[in-house]
Image 1 (cartoon, rainbow, N blue to C red):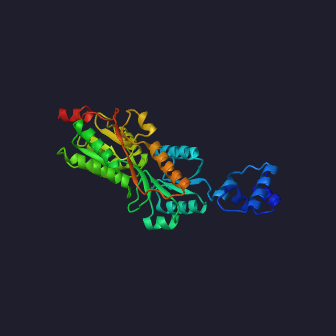
Image 2: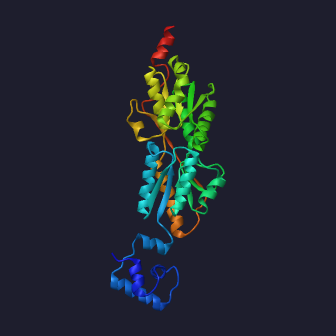
Image 3: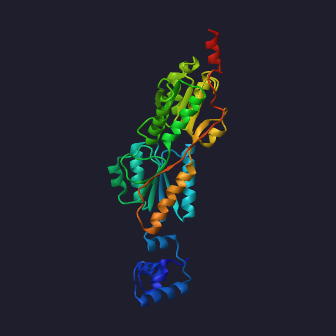
Length: 345
């Protein structure tokens, strides 16, 4: 295979000069240009990806950080990112961080050392804005799914506050007045906004303030977070549950089922995300749907557009709408065994 070094040798110039002559990004003399063109034609040279990178000063690789690729939501996000990146002529370097601050710092350091052109960052346990600036320098950055407090980076996020409000209004509309909210441990703005939207809407119905418990953003986190409240659900003292992601909701549903608490007869459950498993469990999960593929694709498209224009990103926060998807995990209270036991007393 003919290389750029072969062209340089035949033309009597350096490989860098060949790159400049082919890309037009730096001026070379007409005589050198002619020798390079003649050598390219004689050898039948076609610039490869590495030569194109040398000519353009770009690797055409984007870094993607997600907390957990085993989480269906982030797997769908990564798929949306990769599809849009491939369509734009870029490859993706994927790193997972496990919602761990130190792993995120190491991942950011590694990504920068691999000389990527830009970063798509779904924060799990993000560094401070000053650390982020130190780790990435002037590398273009787009936040997706999660905002970082104080960061002025371009961001693509869902309307998390509105999603919490929709969940509260749905449960209240069914007649529920006693609810538990499962939030994520840590300082995640998405979780904070979903809980804030729920509690603000809940306050308007004149019901007792919801109980709030924290857990990991996982199936196991949902199971653990629900544990102290199982007896209250069994007695009918609590009848509604909102979890800030679907995995937590599904974990809580599993643990309640194991304790003999029925969904939706004794507890109505609403999740957030609309991951694929939510559509196939029994009962199917009522949830707040995010356009996860759209978020990832839009973030990449914005990043590629800025790179191709050699222009800065706009620094705006782009907020995407959400919608309530009603399925079988929610119903009016008073249909389950706990209600029947209470009535029999």
